[in-house]
Image (spheres, rainbow, N blue to C red):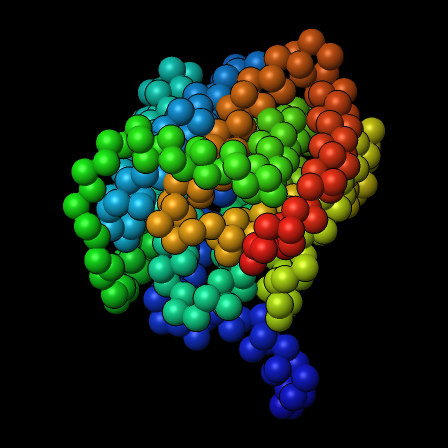
Length: 417
């Protein structure tokens, strides 16, 4: 039975960025690697909670993993504008592979201790602080026709969240059967896929003049550029708020799985998969759009959907309801972050892209450690449900405030929303 012309046309529209060889390689390699990454994420959370039985320790581990992004991402963005981004990514992926294999060896040998988790979480955070700005900017380098950039970012988000359907579910099964160590081993080996993909690419080298400007001066130029551009500043502030008070729900999911829903590692895996399904739906929704102009108004709406989902999730005591509410939250978070990314990438000047995307990384990943620490501390004092309730309310309030500044894109003649 042949596919209808409408289905074929629709699939070509959704997957149009895959016509570029470099992006196809990246898409496949990233997909394999991300499955392993999500397996490690679930295994790390479960292992930390099993060893300590402490909500506060979950927050501390999240903090040490993410704080380097807050401190180092702006500086890393300067080097992402200076250095060869593909070479940077090959180096960071190799270091992350080393981290995962070390963690696997410690767990499988029975020698793992909490301080190992803290040290290795901090190490991966250091590497990711340089990886994220280079990765965000590198998408632009792989796409030859820039009108397809929005589709490429949406597909990147789709594979990120599609892997979240497979990784956590596999992790839950493997942890229940053999323990956490195998998850770390699989993740370590999965980095070979993205490293091979990066090495197989053919990227036209760009002319780089020798930079004599001090790093701190370039950093200051990037900050001034962002601060003086009202819509960019507003989007980054909303991303930072959601990362601070909303995204730490991931850190608290082991508590909901075990204490609220009375489940085990498989329950945690399915909850994370539920969020991933919603996020995948959001990514496909964006990928199916032919034109990304005029979508800025969706950013605060999506943030409000995410916050509303967290509020409702905080009251749920039934697995199926919790699962469905995480679908809703995942959809809202995905649409907000992907559209913010696309708006920034298509708005900024080329010579400042790495620095602006480093501020996006700082807002997206850099605020998360403070959120993890805050969430862990609040959950210890007022409980995980009340912590998510407050976070959801703050996300909705932030979305309302941000919506007032979206028209500024048009006033400043931006190519953004």
